[in-house]
Amino acid sequence: MKKICFFNSSDFWGGGEKLHLENAKAFRTKGYDVTIAAHPDSELWARAKDEGFQTFAITIGSTSFLNVFKLLNIKSYFQKEKIDTVIFTTSQDLKTASIAAHWAKCSKIVYLRGLATPIKNSIINRYCMKTACTHLIANSQETKRTMLQNLSAHIPKEKIAVIYHGIDHRLLEKDGPKLPEITSEEGTILLGNAGRLTLQKGQQHLITIAEKLKAQNVQFKLYVAGTGELYDELQASIISKNLQEEVILLGFVADMEAFMRSIDIFLLTSSWEGFGFVIVEAMAKSKPVIAFDITSNPEIITDGKTGLLAQHSDANDFAAKTLEVIQNTTLRNQLGSQARQSVIDRFLITERITELEEYLLSGKTLRSI
Image 1 (cartoon, helix red, strand yellow):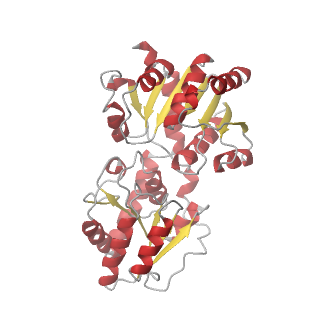
Image 2: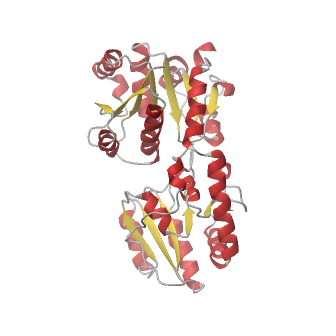
Image 3: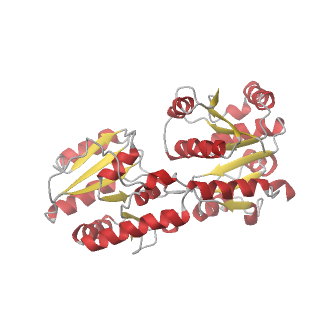
């Protein structure tokens, strides 16, 4: 394993794209020759350029795996650059990159899956995952479970490794600038949420939670970082509930470190998560996290120790747990301190990259089935 291509065709910036860039930087630090294949109009492309990576422009759609000319172009790039390892995360990249890499005879073709949703038992998915790919890696036990939900007859569970994501140790630093958009008065608790504004991320629950906190005369502000198709709907709901002073939609926030430094408690209302990277980011800054008790959240949050888990989709329970942490300063500080220590113990990128590297070098592959 000498030259690695991180392959991500998404044109938006999210947790998977951030992970790709962080992993690329970590492998480069270990001495590997690393390239990044990305959409030329994406944030990942721009940041990869800024970091000095060699880049390869790709535009991939859901049916690109049927385009022989596109596949041959990608295959040619892999061969020309002598790339022996290709790592990708999205479903559309699985179909396209794995086939091109298989044709190019890359020795390691790695599907690093981050979505905790079932995979269709289709001919193309079976071919890509069992024949083209050499390694299947899930970012949580929950993601592994959903990968096998429809494919357990074709892929033995022991052939899917589970390797958690990690963060840079520098994110543990508490000192640094805060986000100027986040302001408060003395006695006001600052709540935060971050993610794409979509149904999956569940920000509609935040409106209900804010209503209940306001009804309890809690002095708070809830800042939501992110953009997405639900922006207008959420903003209209905020206005209709007369929560303009309490709930603020920030839009895209580039500096998530500053965002996390600025808040007191982080709320994650997602209906599912493959791996809640944003949870770890909050925990690294000693912020207690409240989330629903679903999918991979319990793998990251130890309920009552590093955060609190609310009953799934129960905004009343979520609001009650949020109120408990707001009113109990000792609990808030204790949860935050233990959350940070959990990141140190389990989620630092240096250890997780070493684990990934050792697995890829171990000789264990799907093709040994």
